[in-house]
Length: 151
Length: 151
DNA sequence: CAGTATCCCAAGCGATACTG
DNA sequence: CAGTATCGCTTGGGATACTG
Image (tube, rainbow over all chains, first blue to last red; front, side, top):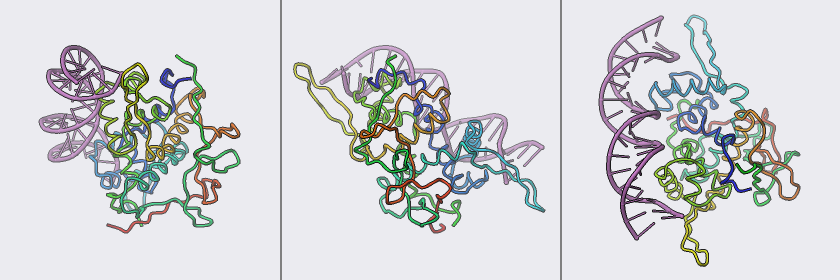
């Protein structure tokens, strides 16, 4: 089946771009993953207007990737923070893929600001496609299959 | 080190969003991966105006993810097609991550339009973080490390 | 076919000010 | 602090027409 004839209304990649195919959304997600959880911190660190941060946070909460939680330090008043939901956590491979591509091809000096390591061994990890035994399959052995019927 | 104090000028994820953090660019990349290579086909299939397709193709070519190639069928005239470069191929995990997240969480019926399989065994593959032996590491064993100095 | 050029409306976004 | 409201510029992007 030819992909160009496939109706992509229910394409997972397209659905993903509709929610996450946006610079600001991706940067917020990155920051929350890396431990930045408060509105003000996000705004300062990302460097966008409060309008943008508000909109994108709302979108992420609406789609269930982030949850909003109020917490109160003793003596001070209520603060809000944004935390990853279960669903949000499953988007981690996307961030890792971006990091990997970015540092490999887009950043000249290879000083990586962040990395992903195995807590047991301390070695750094890479993204790969694995079979159901958890073993990586080499790229030349991977095939894309179009399952859809023509529309 | 606290991520919110890190200067993200040279962040790989940010660099990636600057090039690929855009709905149209991502959809073009998807289509080229899936075998759609001609301008007209891309435009029809993605459903954007020719202006957009032109701009985004140019961006992808400028950044070296796609190459432009002219080919000539006998008897007909010259056609153009866009093909993945080596660099473009390395962005595949990003597409796969999007597909995986999209089908898992965003598409209701789980009829996947595309999948990634091992050509030898025929089994379908999943994204994972692997150690240098190519073995997947369970998520709870993965840690994000911030390497940067404060700015 | 593979775009480019123009027109024009809509959306994105920053700046600033304001609110509970 | 955590936003919302408003303003106004700038960009995005569809429609249409045109070119080699």
